[in-house]
Length: 292
Image (cartoon, rainbow, N blue to C red; front, side, top):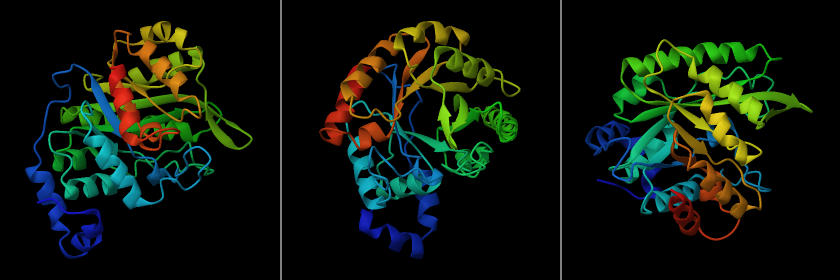
């Protein structure tokens, strides 16, 4: 039985076993449904301390508000599922909104936003065994590669082992690679065609098998370069949303072009849909679904 958002703390305090029970009875679905496309809403940002949206530094800090937005998004036609960390996914389980949805567990959250150790991105979230135990459908990890930061080597190593662990359980793993560097002390991802191509080549070769590996990729600075960039791998890919600033229409057009490419299977979008610069969550989600 589902509960309401105000009841979450009470249930967690008095009946923590309710989470496992909800996970055990959740109705599952195939990763790719009848549409042949995948539309996932992402909400794994808070666990990395990344709470800002646009000019609002703590926009995602209000958990009840975030959960309400997620419930609205998940109820819209064409939304296949959600990507989040354990705390958020378990809230959504208790709320009863994950039936017949794809549930993706976020695995590495240790590279906190702005930290000196940001590139040593330890796996402090879901493990492969957790995703299997909770009957979730896939995992996701982030692998940022800074050629000047030794922490990236540990991230690459643990990423490869996570790919092996997920493949051993026949669970899909969405790998989000970037070539990154620090600019004025802040980590910046390079979205040039060459950098994204290089990141795809590196990520595709990690682990003992790529059978269950998917790529989660940004649209390059010049979206016309995406066709050539995606020739770097035969792995299935989804587009990530990222922050779009004030040019929501421009972002939609970039996504629309990239979605026509043969290896692209769908989208994983978070803040730009949950906290749209203009309009409602419903409108933003419906527009994104329409691109598919």
